[in-house]
Image (cartoon, rainbow, N blue to C red; front, side, top):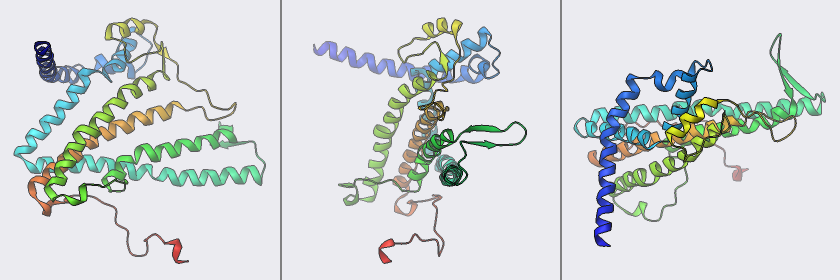
Length: 312
């Protein structure tokens, strides 16, 4: 039994090393042959379009894709070990991406409030059954459609502002040990947390959310257990079948957008786990004086402080 266990561990190590080595070839092939997996973007309902679409479906949650992305993370880190300023540049770029997307998506909260006000006025004052937006041929839906569509704004705030909130330090943390340890120990905890919690959790949820999204966009249905050859067979009958069924007869019909937002959210979490790991390493290496270095945090100006309602 001990021999079997040793052989199993050795086989796993060999499998990981093999996939890490193949990651460079797979990434190089994907970059030098983009039409093999992007041909579906200019959809003309050809066999090549269908085959490239199924390749995206398969490789988007495949072992090959994971190791290709992981090796990019490793290579960046190795280069950053030698050139810290390069790694700081990567951190600033990734955190800047999270901040930019989050700050833009936060405006969806204002749109949600304004649209709700319009719905209430039209329903209670003008007793309108629908809303028409635009000129000539307007976009016209029942008021219940716009009422349910408010959920999309809420989903945008949650999914697209999640990493932005992380950069800003706005998430609630349960602190039992962290505050009592030294500065460098905190940075080690942060690095381990990004490697063994943030990344694996994002990958695990991505694997199922990716196919969950595609099942609402195309037929025949796809599954995480489908091998590439099975998906290539399904490609013959593949066609777009975007889910437009609402929860109510005249309700919002774009629920596939929620699934798309989930995939985007998980991708941003995984990418920001890189930034958090890199920042934690750099702060660990450079010492306490580097804490918060290049961190673009929102600062409230004088007069913008939130009111404490308990004072009134």
